[in-house]
Image (tube, rainbow, N blue to C red):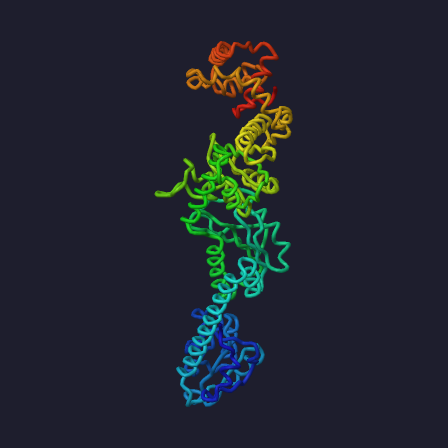
Length: 530
């Protein structure tokens, strides 16, 4: 912070006297002794020029030109030392300073220039010390507020300290906190964050269509936790930048969690979902669900998230979470994808595990819509082939069937070119929604698949998936072979093997219906069209 000229004039020990111009509102960046007739090449602006006039011209016109050069280069003022060459300040200098509005000070002979320079230096040092103390107090205040009130308190305190609007969002653009009066900032921040994939290394996001908006990444140890946006920051105040940087660090620490804790939670969620899917009647399932936020006897919805390969040129998963770390615990063979989806569902009770080539998620039925919204918001623009299948609400005992429904819904969505598939919107799923009817149909139709599933060739030649694709594409050899990625002759040979093992001709519509129902009730991937 510069030194007010009035403060210098108020130092009795210096004995300075204002001869011309005004000292009001004049700030001095430095006091510099220089005896050149033209000191302008060495001026940066804001200096108080100290001179004894050793080389001052006698001509009034040249004296006026000297003053004009100081004014043109932004000098804060001129301090003229009398008693060495000039008994008093030259008349031409006084008149020109008065006309140009440049502050002119008379320095008495007993006052050395070094005393003026020291006074300015000491005042600058004091101001820096006070500014540093203010910054430290603000930093401490921001930290204490965050400990007491969390992110909303930090955002509110930061906005007050900077006199600016502040918003914090998660990495997908979901609102975490905003300062009072910052409502208008939320939409452009969300748009900037969610409009495209931002590499994990991005720390500051440029938003050219929003002047004055700064968007800072909150980069945690494992992934980017979100963004802190500020608009209206006074960039001329260096302390503001220090306070902002401190707030970014505090916000990151508040959102970030120890890697070991995240790993333990991920392992618990994966193990719990494995238990629900594989042993729904096991003792303790209800207790496990309760520990992760599911209410007793609450129905759940299963999501199947597929196609998490990033879009060309993108690093979508990397922008949410890093890859598997050496020594990382967890049951998933691809923990980065499970961690990514879990990050999208922050704040929503859920279980997640890697299965069937995708990520399986279970959420309370009442949280299904927010969960689907969060997943689709992150899939959009990041994963070109990303789809999510959504089951109907079921009891935990029926979670395995719900997963099969979600897988079928995801396949239906992909075939239809949609991002979301809901099992309740599939005709066959509607028929099978009744548990008793589903059980009875399974008892009646499942024997038709027994020989197919039991035969070693079924696994070797992928006959169940072949049958599913054939039925899904309504018996079209061309479309089914394309979906499977095999030649039509290969497909014909496999279907012939299916007919041989099941004893059912697929030319008969009734046989196709029986096999579709059998696939649906065994939990295997099932065609969309019965």
